[in-house]
Length: 199
Image (spheres, rainbow, N blue to C red):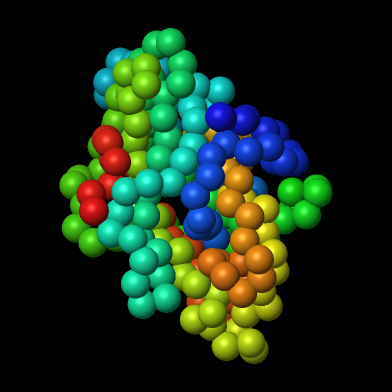
């Protein structure tokens, strides 16, 4: 199930056991995405850009867990009735509490291994794009580096969008990524590519 939310994301959109954080506040991430991810994508393909309302969000693919990290994929699926285009990096952060407030920083933009060149991804109805998504376990940090906070899930901004999707991924304190004051980035995400992330 997909949900588009403007301010307080409180509804579920999927169910796996991981989450995302990183290098800027949600508003900063949205601003950066809006300025860098909407340009050549739709224009190059002649297909309109995907909006939040067109998309559903889930996690899947990737090589899985290891060394206090989980290597997975953040997946955006076209749930609309016409083709649309994605280009660039999603914005992602943990949220907690009944008000859906952000926990920690937004996900750092980075790469997970060797990826194909960044380019626009055109999604037919039902097709998906994914970005490599790494989550560092909160247990990998010392208590002085990480104040662990139970979270409800992930707030996800598609490239160029100011409305967010919510992915329900509740975690108890001390598990994936929910540090409110990490010394180093807990979450990193790459740019969107066609299909699921390879194992």
